[in-house]
Image 1 (spheres, rainbow over the protein chains, first blue to last red):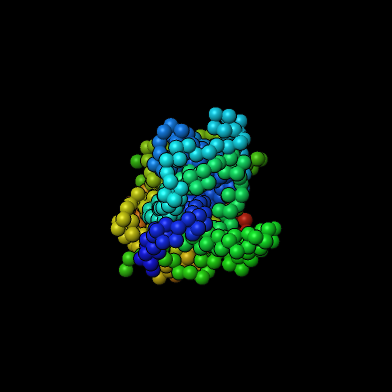
Image 2 (image 1 turned 90 degrees about the vertical axis):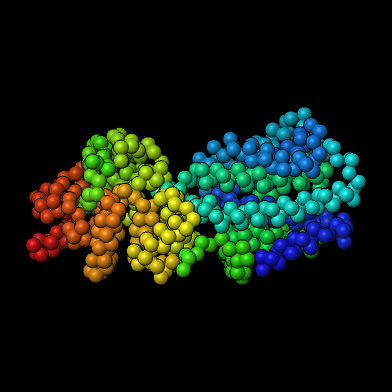
Length: 308
Length: 250
Ligand SMILES: Nc1ncnc2c1ncn2[C@@H]1O[C@H](COP(=O)(O)OP(=O)(O)OP(=O)(O)O)[C@@H](O)[C@H]1O
Ligand SMILES: [Mg+2]
């Protein structure tokens, strides 16, 4: 089954040649959702850190890309640099926020994202409240630009799922899951809880930063009011919870479900939001482990089995 | 040589004093039983040794290190393994993974060695058949075994057992005593064992301390401590009945 997943990724890579921008555009959205949800799941699903402030790193990724592109680096080359930047920015931030846990952590991350948003709003050098458009991109013909954005989106989504899987199934992931379950027992079992959480926080920030940069190359315009919006964290939580918290497939399934709902129902305005809410409630009540948690067998297992 | 030294540690919760300038040393390889009435501060004492609780005053030394202010994870890696009186397994992990993570992080083993250590400990604690089960599905007694397995998997020099025998049948107590004795002989580990099931203690330990009101009111050979008037006086209810049973046996 895992090979099928790889095969699907290869097929998807051919979309720009076969189907063109009309299909590319919505898929970029889907891929960015998959990546965002996967990183949020590393935090909340595995490490027990429910963040409401991941939009901070979408913003850092996007504005980081702006600064790098302004400095003359090709925006597409700068995407990974923007991701690294988000991870680095997260390091000092992690010290105050990781002193908190549970609901306090969630609120603190949100407040922090608001501080980031305000700082950008108050900085005319990076466009202030009006936002900025992406420099250095006009050299690309629109068709090629859209294709490259698409490939980047696919690479970031597939890379994020793979990276979170590799992390989760290894030595680090086992310790992270233990920390998520019970930090007290974890510490007295020799797990350096703070270090495990810090890594999760910074890696998730880097992954989310890559998505922020990607979204900027997709929309070509970024505004603090939208990129730093808390709705992104709500969305990440929605996708991961309905898909299956703490599984590799869950965020992918959640992203697909959300994407399908959005594509089919967005035209119906507010009813679409009501339906999203209803889905979330139904899943939490009837399938608390998420749809994949109840229906699927893991394609990307993370369990450690005793050797016989 | 002393593996553990508590030097005049004091700890208060509001008006409750759980440790009152308490001084105690445990030698390498010693097995020391801890008894005391409910609320005497036994579990709190373990908390200050393992690092979950910070004393208000005094010093904790372990294996030559001053550990008073060190994180529990560091103390575990130095060789302090503990169980919790109310078991707190990693509920989302399997029984095997619970033990494996302790072997990897506490005992700092890797790869095959960590798998082998976890498997061995599960065998010793009688959990081998449950290895693949989610810990959330275990009953209380199995969870207590898992506490022991997790603590042993960190390969401690000092093992802190907090009421692991409660609720066990007589043959199970015998099994547990054998297991701990075997671990002591093999690894030379020191044991501090809080237990209301006095029979398990007297079969294992060479020394018994009795705690009450944050002070040590009895310290010495198990039977001698249980027979002392000061110790008899503080015991009420269940523990009293046990002491009496012990007296009848004697
Ligand atoms: N975190 C805490 N906050 C406030 N009070 C506490 C805390 N932990 C323990 N206590 C109080 O300290 C006293 C000693 O508790 P402790 O758990 O150490 O007793 P114990 O000797 O282990 O008792 P038992 O035999 O019932 O397990 C009790 O009165 C308890 O209520
Ligand atoms: Mg206790």
